[in-house]
Length: 263
Image (cartoon, rainbow, N blue to C red; front, side, top):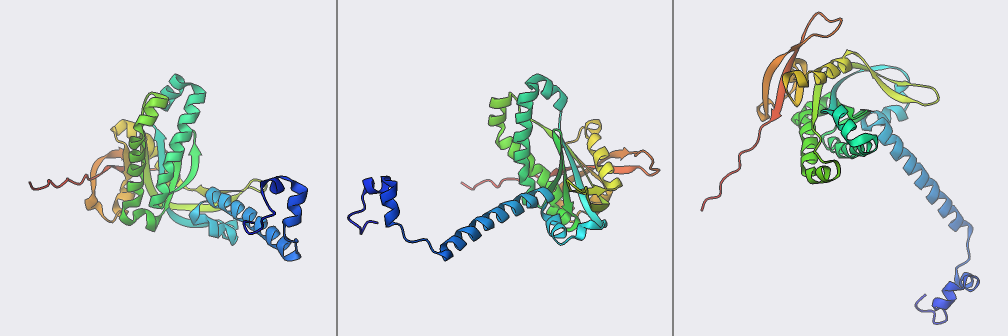
């Protein structure tokens, strides 16, 4: 364009004249644009499905392995906002909805610790881990506290927009669940089993024992590096229809002491 002295700004603005300077469109050009846009559409579709189904289930779904229910050992975390009913009443449904939206966006940090958000439940969520990835390096524990750190770092934003910083509690449990694809028109991935109900019951016990994070005794035994955690037995809960009670532990991350610089 720069080498052609006859092509100036006025020529470009003049659409009929500008078309004369364009190269002739060949069949290979048309094919390129068609393939390019089809690739963009396919990429966008697969990315949205990837987010919807989850990292761990995507390939199983793609190859049709979820049509038949299968059993897997998973870690489940129920995470919930504290005093959400009071917050909703004070903020109103519109501002509270924006608060929930901001919180869920910050919750994406859990993916850095191999966690996958299975469902959003009002002002909370159900997060899952593969057994190996969740136990390794205490990812299921670190993920929760990483989320709290994100909220803390954005505390000025939350105070300015919602007059306070939201707080959270969570319950963790590990066990066998059935994984299957449900629905015919609107399909979804479903987990079924007592493991999910137990995790929900553990989360609801956080207020009773005044803990931000509670884990089951089964998960406690499965954790590898317990030395990096402050773990304390806090009590037991009884589940409806179950004879054996579930042992609970309160868990916190150990804070690393900062080394003082020598003068």
